[in-house]
Amino acid sequence: MSDDTPLDAELPLAGLTVLDVSSFIAAPAAATVLGDFGADVIKVEPPGSGDPHRNSFQNPNYPRADVNFVWQLDGRNKRSVALDLKHADGRACFDRLVSRADVMIVNFPAPVRERLRLRWEDVAPVNPRLIYASLTGYGETGPDRDMPGFDVNAYFGRAGILDAQRTEDGPPGFSLPAQGDRCAAMTIVAAILMGLRRRDRTGQGGWVGTSLYANGVWSNGTLAQAALVGAFVEPRPPRTRPRNALANIYRTRDDRWVQLTLVREDKGWERLCRALDRADLPADPRFATRDARRANSAALVAILDAAFAAQDWAHWRRVLRAHEVTFGVVERLQELPRDEQARHAGIIAETTSPSVPYTINNPVRLGFARPRPAGAPPAVGQHTGQILREIGLSDAEIAALRAAGAAD
Image 1 (cartoon, rainbow, N blue to C red):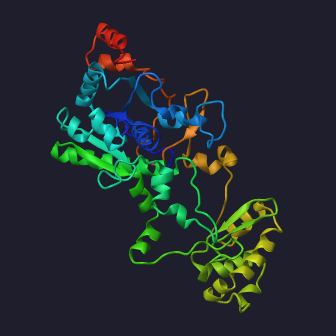
Image 2 (tube, rainbow, N blue to C red):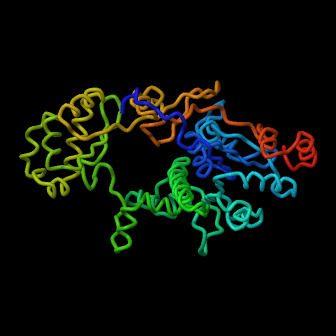
Image 3 (cartoon, helix red, strand yellow):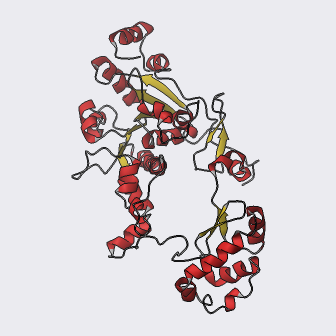
């Protein structure tokens, strides 16, 4: 699509009001995507510290930084209202917000939702047209429905992804921060859009939802489907003795790793041999057929290791491309800010926040719209007065709410 393609006058979700009544990552990230495309996202937070995710950048498993890069990513393009939902007056304000909203996103465990009266059946009488989206760790029903779930235990652990990453005689694999959360966020977005589509037709709101567990199994679908018919993958052999030497990684002379992905071996094998200047390999009986290459994978890896180690990554990038070999580089995140392709593809976006001038764009691309510029994320309760005035409260009433601790 050309950069000069005409864009719609309004973003596709302009006019929608979304209540982000959630914490941490997956559900708030879904609200971020809706805000990127024009929705008015109101983050409902408890007075004081607000969403605990505001402090996630201090997590010891996250990179060290002097700026709150995490909150820029998940808090952008939102307005914050701080209300105590346990206080009668705070709850009354919240119900007013619900009555005017199009979408409400929650991710608290079922017992918390029951205690705070945040279930679908609690808010539906206030606004029958509301699309109510819930994210859980393990699902809305069943013996584990009340268990707290994060992506590391529900998405990666329970779904079998970490077990499938085991190597021979090794422990399960490990996950990296929030990867499952961000995948689940896009499922929430899709569910909400389906709910809105139904409302367009019927005028009725309704419940939509997903779980981290469901998204993990879906992401692990090929192996999970095999398990349903009694088939299982054995733990992975080491890199030097892979199941397939042509779907393996190899180190270059300048310490980069090339990922070979020869899905069509019937074409790719001889192309690779030409790129390596090893015309003798296709005739070698150890590597003449697909089965032979599998049986002699360790010997083939030894040959490929020596070949790739003889040249720098720039050489292999040029030569493999020239011979139409399917490959990639195991990229270092330090290089992402300078990745020209990431900027062309809209993966990196500029912000209006001086402390975090660039952020990660959501992955949706539209021919008729661009996400709105990422603004600075709000402070806790930054827009409380503004939002409460919009639902009809006077300045005196707002002051009284603050004095009573119902709002901040």
